[in-house]
Amino acid sequence: MAEGMLKQFIDRRNFLNWFLGSTAGAFVLSVLYPLSRYLTPPPVAESTARSVTLSLKPKEVKANSGQIFRFGSQPGILVNTPAGELKAFSAACTHLACIVQYRSDLSEIWCACHNGHFDLNGKNIAGPPPKPLEEYAVNVSGDQIVVSKKV
Amino acid sequence: MIRAISRGFLWLGIAVILFLPVPAIGQQQVENCVACHQSLPDERLAGPAKLFSGDIHAVKGFGCVSCHGGDASDTEMSAMNPAKGYVGKPTGTKIVDVCGRCHSDARFMRQYNPSLRVDQVTEYYASVHGRRLKEQKDSKVATCANCHKAHSIKPPGDPRSSVHPLHVADTCGSCHANAEYMAPYKIPTDQLANYKKSVHWRMMANKGDLSAPTCNDCHGNHGAAPPGISWVGNVCGQCHAVNGELFSKSRHSQVFVQMGIPGCATCHDNHQILETSDELIGSREKAICTRCHTAEDRGGKSAAAMRAMIDSLRQEYDKAHSILLKAGHAGMEVSQPEFDLNEAKTALVKARAAIHAFSVVTLKKEIDPGLQVSAKAYAGGLKALEELGFRRKWLAVSAIIILALIVGLVLKIRQMESAQKSSEKEEV
Image (tube, rainbow over all chains, first blue to last red; front, side, top):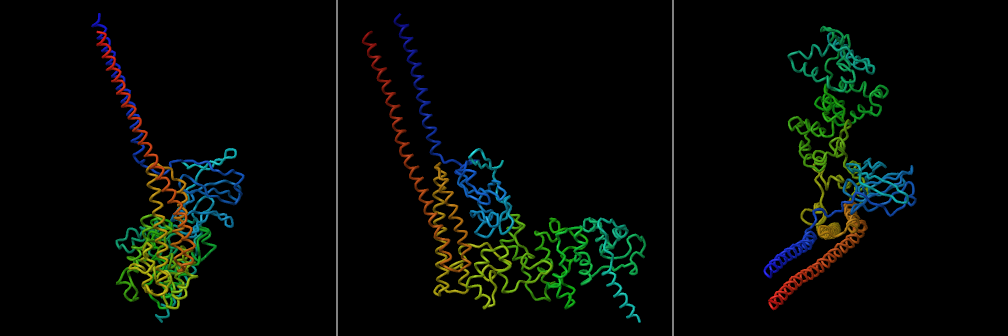
């Protein structure tokens, strides 16, 4: 009788040890894994965000004007054309990556560094820029302007 | 008598060229010339006939007789009767006359390409080629058919065309890089080799930028001539507008003209225009300024000061960029200072252009804002790294605490087990 109770007790203790050991191991792993992930540098430092909600409201952007905004770490330019259409492009000039600006007197996007001109479709039309500005999609939802990279 | 007859034929030939009927649009001409010529054993006579089917003129419905005269419907040798307008192979000014008959006629050309210029002949006779042909009867100079490859002419936008931007240099070089052919003119023949070392050619050939300049962009195409000393700046300024404007207002602009040396090319060369670097400015070894200035004269001191300013902005930009990169790779959010740093990069590019004003004051206006932005971005990066250090330090502390807790729990459990065993033994 006493031997049977002792055997049962030993089995229960083994099970408890096994259970505690497993849970402790899982706990250590759950601590070490995020720790190692945190200490390992990510392969890409740049934000991979594909869209941004601007702090501007549609009514705040006058026709025939432009506004620089932050798209991750890169500059973008929001343009309200003379016809009242909102358009957005990368604001990094395709020549030497200077930040472009909107010229309301020309109704063009212009780079002051080397006098590069882009039309309101982002196409390089004069000066040294070799290719058009990347165009982003603009969606207006109520009072919000959402700019997204085109797929 | 014979001379009079010959002269008569000569005038008849000229009259025929000038008054050959201009073909109507879309009119497909009966073409027996090709049928005979392409099977002739003499390649000089067969080659053009074989090539012509791919020529833009053939595509538009023009036949051999449009330029050579004669009767294309006649299958006999009588097709080439001067009485039928046959002029044979035009040479010299006659080539220009033949091409100009259509290409100088705005109303006619409008049918094919309304935007095509019709002043090529006027331009050609203003070129060195045209002037030598007309005034000195120099038969070696290029005419229309040399550059546009008679019988296989393609529009300039066609990549197979001899005047497509990618092929212009080789087309010009077919004469200008031929030392033997060019010997009588006593001009250099290394332009093509030098151009192919230039940043312009690299941009065009390697990066596919067809807007990069080739021979005709600086020398003109039909009016080809070397730019004059005083207007080299205007030529380069067509593309490098900001640099050109700054230079034209600078002290150097006038001094260079007085010295009889060209703007732009004096520092950047003409055909072998290499990629620029900050080393070109200043008073050190590779600086171009040292060609005229000593380190001690006023210009030399200004050049050294400008170099120091550019170096300082570049170093500050690099320092900020480097720390932000490090913070970004460590997982810190630094997109705002990275965004701000774009302003410093813009300032650096503008400062490099502002060098062409050769004024310390003008340069300082571009440099100072760039330095401020770089310093702010660097501070942002430094703060991010400090934050990273803080997080790592406290992560280590919390990890030690958690591990200590685990060890404590294990020991406690063992202690409890041990106590239980002892009590069991006592019971037994």
